[in-house]
Image 1 (cartoon, one colour):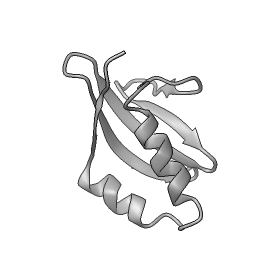
Image 2 (spheres, rainbow, N blue to C red):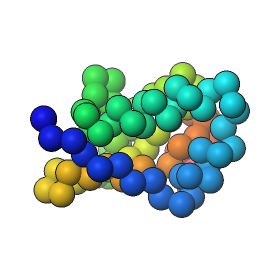
Image 3 (tube, rainbow, N blue to C red):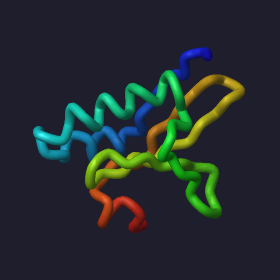
Image 4 (cartoon, rainbow, N blue to C red):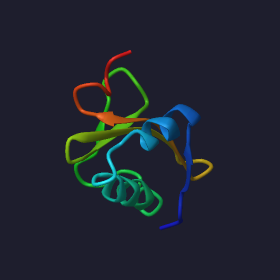
Amino acid sequence: MAKYKITIKKSAAKELSDIPKKDLPKIVKRIQSLAQNPRPHGSQKLSGQEQYRIRQGDYRIVYSVNDKVLAVDVFKIGHRREVYRP
């Protein structure tokens, strides 16, 4: 399978910097794994949107996949109680 290019939105990068240091390496590793498989086991498509989410502990990573250009765009990273709020 071809490798996908991962891009992280500025706001998601800021949210990533606010995550506690003990959880950060696992979340970064999970995001990097999307390059090999953008729809891993356990990912779910969000209803009414062309976005997916994966879990990493108490955190959620919301992203979209563009198969035509082999790109994964990360939109939001946050704690499960906050990530779905507008």
